[in-house]
Each structure stands twice: as structure tokens, then as C-alpha cells.
Image 1 (cartoon, helix red, strand yellow):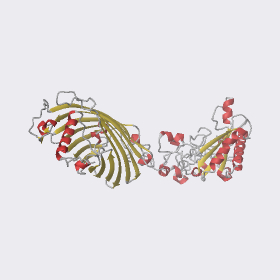
Image 2 (tube, one colour):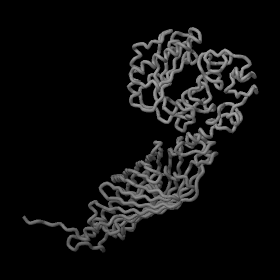
Image 3 (tube, rainbow, N blue to C red):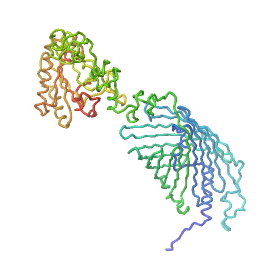
Length: 628
């Protein structure tokens, strides 16, 4: 069998490309495109207009495609100006696309606008945008070749009558586009910037025919997304995807970029990607100060590669940015670079990663609840102004004993009786006379009116909204955290909390409560550094002294149960609140049943220190057996 070979002559190539160009022109024209579409994204989506906080920006992009085939070379130029006005952005964009010897040119101008709505976080925006413009399409029919000029006997004859009539060689088309974009920063330790966008361009689909026929300019739908992973202060990885569809044409780009950040607001971006079924993309972008320049190359691997001789598309772009934009109603009182409406500590300079607050140890050093010039951490009386010589306290009765050491701070007395003029009654032995003691049968201190202060913040447990975590009086005794509403100070939790209920006047654990303590003991075996507070409570039946003792017996019963199951006794601390801290009314049987309880609170080991500001360990994911 004789083998037949098929060869492609230059004439075939010429006709093939020419007819392809003509077909695209007369049937469904396709917009120009850029491989580095993220460089000036408002070309893709009007919602991205002036999305940065630069006051103004000038972008220029140029692309040369298929330069090895002069009859089919595409040259694309885009120039855009963007300006930010508070939450609004506007811009004007010019673009020109020149295709082949027929001088098929598409030139357009459009005015763009966008509204950037901050959703609450420092870097969380939802943007809406639109654009209105005019597109001109024109061509030179004398520079084109048609099937009628190719004769079977003599071949191609450019002098043959075209046999084609073109009453129109230039058209003006209205152009309308809309889009939406969402940018959000997720994560705390290693923030990730997520970007999603969608745009519809030429959605009115105007008629683009040169022959008074009906050929609508097809709508272009664009959808894109990217995720920026900041692996360190100087290194960022970005993965991105773009999908576009216009008429019968589809484009999908998948890419991965690596950015190296240097000092002086400079960076180097190196990226690669693929335009599916067409080319491998290579991109390099250099940014210094408020200027950037990029170079991109398409390494073609489609069926057109033999015709192009392996030459792909070349792209270059330059961007110039001017000034910084300060949005209205976004003052920065403390000058830390974080605007007040986003700053959790607007009066104290802080860090972006802590939402504008200083580090907890810095807060502890600077917090002065009573304004006496002595930080709470060094103030023995942090809620009452005092003198430095008395460690922030005063001597109200001028008897030579400062109030925290004076059993009768408002009655001048003698040191022998602890500052009282007589030997007072002190049922709980805490140094506070019974007539001045708010917790007569529970040990406390003079500073907290005879009640306990478990976290050592100067607020008694009965007045403290966070009795196990140290915090200033101005925040209800809760620490100053720097996180979102879900982790606000008033919702701060221990590592774990278990509540065991008792029968009236009993200190015996009921069998159906055993499983709670079994689970707790098993869970504690996974921890090393922790502190357990076991607090006994009663209802209001009986006398206060009796209830204080009953609460302690209930706490001891739980302690003994846990000790028998391997929990070290030295990690457990007991306290009885008696009837002083009810969780429900004592006017009903149901309420009294809820008040007869022992609470087991597992805390980070650091909370046992009198200087603790907030827990160093995040709450563990475990079954909670009672509300907090």
C-alpha cells in the first residue's frame, strides 16, 4: 500500500488563518485577554476598581500573540486610571486589540465605578461594581482573502473579484458590565487571604454585524478565586484559578505564585500556571515602593505550536501608584496603624495580629484601674487610689495600718487587735470582723470585704464576672482579650467545668453522677499542667455557718472520688461558697436543686499565679457537662 503524505504549504496556512480570523469576526468575536489577569483586575471585573487603599493608580499592559505568523498576529494594549474616594472607587480604561492584516481593530473606552463595603474585619470587603462604555469595531476588507480568490487551476489570485459586499466597515457598540468581589482574611496565626469574584461583561449583547445581519456580541462571564497563604513575614504563596466563557469560547487558567517580600515595600513575584489546552504560563513581577513591573510569557503547547514555530505570547505591564487613602470615619487615636472602628484597644497602641491591642503581658504592666499611677500588677489595692509608699493603698483611719492589713479600716485601733479598738469576732478567721464581713463563714481578705478572690484581681468572687481569670474592674473582672465576639471576655471558659448535684443536706455523690467524674478523671490523664478548683455550694435552707460546712463536705467528697481515680491531690484546691453564689432562685424546689452542687473547674496552671492576666492555654475540645 502506498503511503500518502499530507503537507501544509504557506498558502494553506495563509488561508487557514485568514478564514479563522474572518469566521471569528463575523460570527462570534472574542475579547482580548491577559495571562497576568491579576495585575489590573478591573479589566476583568469592575468591582475590583480602586480596591487598594492607594489614592490613585495608573496601569499599562501590552500583549503580543502569535508574532511568528504576521497574518494572524494579535496585539493588545490596555491603559487604565483608578482613583479611590473613601469607600468608593472610580476609573477610566482604554483598550485596543489589533488582529491580523485585515486590520480588524477593537477599540474601547469605559468608565468604571465600585463600592467597597467593609464587613467588620480589618481585611474583609464585599465590593460591587459596574462599567459603562463604547466599543468601536472596524476592519479593511481589501486586506482580506476569501474562498472565491482561490481557483483550482491557477491557485490563489488576489486580483479575483471578491464577490463580497460590506456596506459597513465600522460599528460603534454600547458596552455595559457588572461584577461583585469578596476579599476576606481568615485565620489568626497564619492568616489566609481569600478572594472570590464574578463579572458579566457586554451583558446587553449589542449587534456587531458588518452586513446588517443580526450577530450579537456575546456576553463574557468571568469567575475567579485565589488564596494567599502568608507562610512568614517575608514569604507568600498564592494559588489562583480563572474561568471565562464567551459564546462558544472557554478559558480556564490555573496558577501558583510565590512572592518574596523585602524591606522598603518591595517584593518579587514568580509564578507559573496553565491555560488549559493552550499554553504554560510564566510570570515574573517586581515591585519597589509604589511601582511595579511584570513580564509574562505563554509557552504554547496546543496544535498551533508547529505553525508558530514554538513562539508564544509575550506580555509586559507597569503600574504606578500615588499616595495613601485614609477612609472617612477611620481615625487612629492611638497611632498604631489600625483604625479605631477595627481596633479592639483604640486608646492603647497595639499589634495588627492582636486586633490593635498590646500583648497581654504589656496590658498587665500598663493597666491602672484606680488611676493612682501604680499598675494593677504592683498595686495591693488596685480598685482604690492609694500611695506608692503603701503599695497603692491608704490608711483610712490613720492608725498606722494600711487598709488591707486593718481588720477595722474605718475605726482607729491598735496593732494588737489587728487595727481594731477591741478584739472582734471573726467566725472564719480571715481577719475581717463578722460585722464587716460579707462572707462571714468563708475566708477572704479585707480588700474584698471578707470574701474570697480566687484570681487575685482585687474583685471578690461574688462580684467578679470572671472569678477564675484576672482582669480589671473596668471589664467586670474579666481579662482584656483581643479576639472576636465568640471569644469575648464575658464568654471566657476554663479548660473544662463539671457540675455534680446533691440531695438536700447530703454530701454523698449520687450514682448517676459517677460518669461525669469518671470522664473527667480520664480526660485529666491527657494533661500535664493544670489546676483544679473544687467549689461546694448549697441552697439557702439552714444557717449560713452550717451551709459553709456542708459546701466544704461536698467539695471533699468530689476530691476524694477523683483522688481514688488517679488525680493528684496536690493539683486540687477546695473552697466552700455555702449559699452565697446561687445559680437559680431559692424560692422554688427546682431552683434549690440546681443550687445544691459542687463545681469542678479545671484551669491552666498559670491561673494559680496572682499575676495571671488570662489563660495561656486555649479551651480544650471536650464534652461540657454544664453551662458556663
